[in-house]
Length: 387
Length: 192
Image 1 (cartoon, one colour):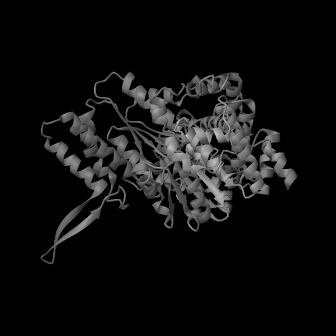
Image 2 (cartoon, rainbow over the protein chains, first blue to last red; image 1 turned 135 degrees about the vertical axis):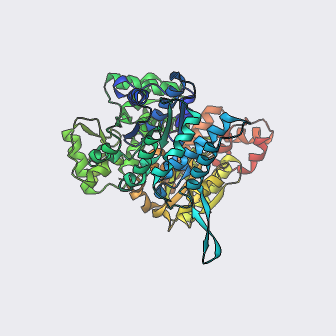
Image 3 (cartoon, rainbow over the protein chains, first blue to last red; image 1 turned 60 degrees about the vertical axis):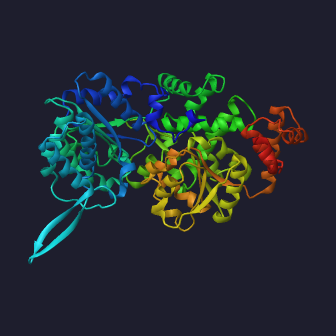
């Protein structure tokens, strides 16, 4: 059951070989890597629908940079920001602080028993002070005072000054672990797509510039809403390095890819090719839904006392996912979904359409082509009839 | 559109089935506190271990509580805090070694996907409501019992005899079967 867990760790899945390379035209990895090879200091924004496989792409980038870049000392670090910092507490300085602390660990590991240079010691102190805070000493009216200045990393959330002042310290540590002007030092910041979109830019803009100035590259996963209304504004911050991860289209090539992904995770004795094809169709090309339906179908088979997943199990699993997607829909949303189903397109006017996209009730296949999630689409008639 | 109701024993069996993946399940109930206790008892019987119930009063503690209990199956109950649970903001902290079942008021499920689209996607299809209708419950129970009898080629009486003699397979499905026929007292024998 572990191989069919939609909440499983994508990093582990990647390492265990449960993933399949995306189709060439959908591969963000290749584009990002090419840019990073040309400009190691470039900072990229990766957006995509929830469950589209962004984290898996980050692991793909990391694996490639670690194995294919031949420079000695290439650094590529994955950071799950959400596990280090409350995402509603991300403020300017957090990404720099997390990168700085990790660089300090890497530098210490590389240096071994040798003493650190004064330059490295100073850089370490400054970046740790930013992250964890420090005690400021002062004399006020001939009285000695100590003031605790909080760090930016959880739990304190107060930024301590212009990040540009920290660039030299970052650069010192970066040179110590990835020497040379073109030495690759890339951070992959995951989870920031779960930040409120209106807070995202203010929270990370200074960090993006500071990392770039220090010669450090980055790929930052951002809210999917940047695919739409606010895309132009955020693109300037990332110097147009914005990559959108699309869902897999349900054409013959896409279906073959999706069934290959299932085959890595479920043996043919459990899920035959026909079953895998049906699961792929029901997923709408959403990677996480693919795994969720397969898991649910396996549970249905288990309840039936069957060692293999049959067509009825898949059908019930798709209906269960559809019902989960349908819960909470109001009449207006149902009407909007029916229109998408009939026309195959959707005009994004505001919050109503964005919510349908964000909750994966509507899928965006690019070029103005939209579809109701195939697990949900058949239930729309039932809901209308019930109303 | 409503979710299909499923029986408590079936929910417990589903939790047990993916317990070692650390999967989350959300369960809507009219009486979340009482349901949490009932579910914990069922899950405990199937897993043959203690399952603690933790009522979340302070929503921001969700991630911390999950991390503190990540090494065992747990039932969380959120009533007044259910709408404020930072399921998306703290999702990275919800990764676990063993399962977590979150029981919330049924009405909370309506806004779950909109409030927490990332968490909802992450747990896939694991959003359920407990069957209130005893007939449905019994129907599902009988169907599952029939499947188990066929699979193991035994009647209920033969299972009891086999378990009492310590010959029953050491299999979670055997434990589930014993619970279904209300002979959970024999679990210790089957586990030997």
